[in-house]
Image 1 (cartoon, rainbow, N blue to C red):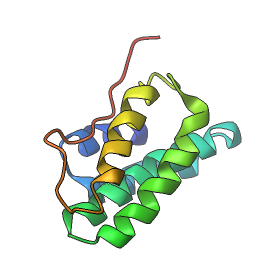
Image 2 (tube, rainbow, N blue to C red):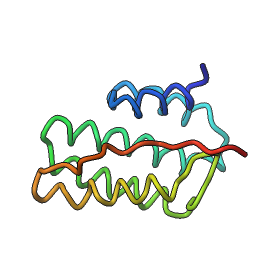
Image 3 (cartoon, rainbow, N blue to C red):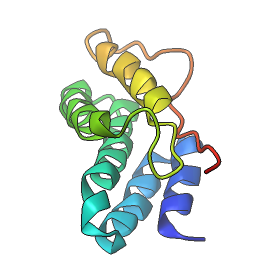
Length: 113
């Protein structure tokens, strides 16, 4: 399985630390024009890992950077429903103040070409 697909599968299973490592491999291997997008996915995984460990300060900072990096790629990029991911990440970012997570974990939805 390619690093991007593997990272997405791990992210969607809530295995954020492992997802971050796989997505980082995709970022390292990716072409220059995809680096910002892939970095945004890596940061989403890192932010969610921080959140899962109760580190709201870390989650807030990394999720905000993830959102900034992914915004130019909405609504869809590299077969990822970026708009849906951004919507979910914004909810999770806003919940870092309370520490109460939204009911639904974020997911990286893929869409056909």
